[in-house]
Amino acid sequence: MMAILQRLCAAFALSLCCLHAAVAQDISLLPKYGGGQKNSAQLAADAQFVAKVDELYAGDRKKAAEDLALKGWGALRQGDAGSAMRRFNQAWLVDQGNGKALWGMAVVQAGSGKGSEAMVLFNEARQIMVSDPDFAADYARASAQFK
View 1 (cartoon, rainbow, N blue to C red):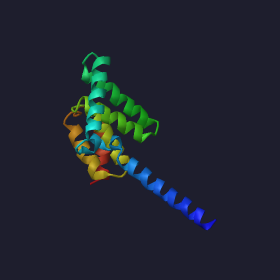
View 2: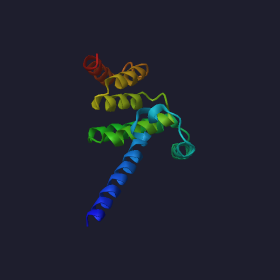
View 3: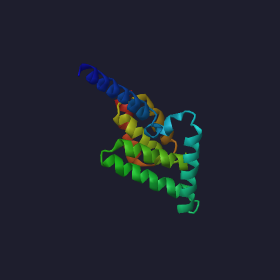
View 4: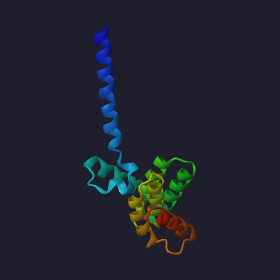
């Protein structure tokens, strides 16, 4: 009986390690997909996603990125930071100059207590969102919080 219990515990521990590894590799939860080198499967998935976006939006990537960023903001308002970051990443993938996506990533990072990462993204978004008063308010709050 004790041997069976030990095997079950070992199997459970191994499954937790595997789960942790799978979760740790979910780059869609990191701003700009973590900024690292993507593997061939990830690059293929990106190409397929962008091709589908181009098809759905008749090549208007700016509009597609705006819509994706808005979905991210909707998810953030619902309290789903993971889904929000995924949408912000998708918007950024389609249009790396989308300020709302960068701003959203910054807000998610700030909400996670990652102040220095948030400020890098806020500063990048600031170049694009210079005239948006809502952005300016978030930027000022983050700047004060993460001095």
